[in-house]
Image (cartoon, rainbow, N blue to C red; front, side, top):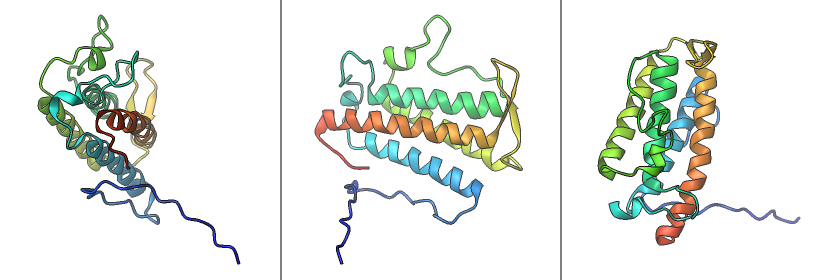
Length: 180
């Protein structure tokens, strides 16, 4: 009998992520996977000197880990606080006159950006925990159409998965570190 080779990605030495249960219900699966992706992103930024987090490692793109931190903080706020919960809060790192300031205007402290991102993730978790069902809806600001919490969670998982791929490349360019 031929044995199929197994491939396992290298893991970070300080990996403390808890993998979502493979047999959990829908809500636990979605929130667990989103948190896993959030933790993955944080691992990709950990151990990098603050000044290097702002490096744009793949020209001509303006992507940097610092920019991704700011972008993901803004995305958390936009989807959970503004779109779903209907909170009247200012947008982060965005204006109609300067829509790409999350990536292009890396003013401010990286530690401050990380603190803002963590706070937005915490607020998002509170909002999700307070929802009675994944069928609960918010209102899309641009169209006025309803959007379910389920759809927001799925879209956020996709958002983090895409940006974790970007973070992989940026981190490897900074110090050669790879892993998931």
